[in-house]
Image (tube, rainbow, N blue to C red; front, top):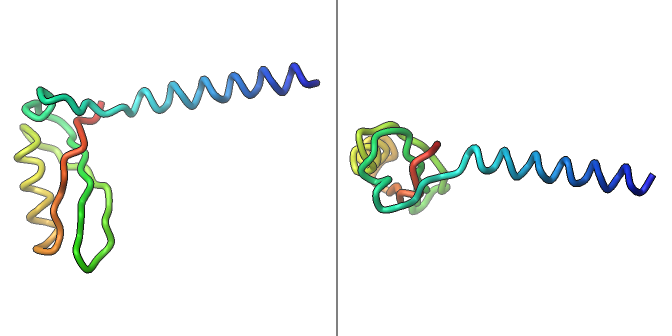
Length: 83
């Protein structure tokens, strides 16, 4: 019984590692100039912070899109390129 539980624990742990690897972010300097879905942490004064994504030809374009929609009290900070 203990072996079965141990094996199931290993399988569950491996599955979690694979799912987190699939959603890994590329936060390298070069990733900022790539097109795709960019992830940001949106800091807000007087409101709730959040994590959001935006499509863009590069990180700067995606950041501008989020900044325009987030309002004057929020600023998106780039976290990485998804995928």
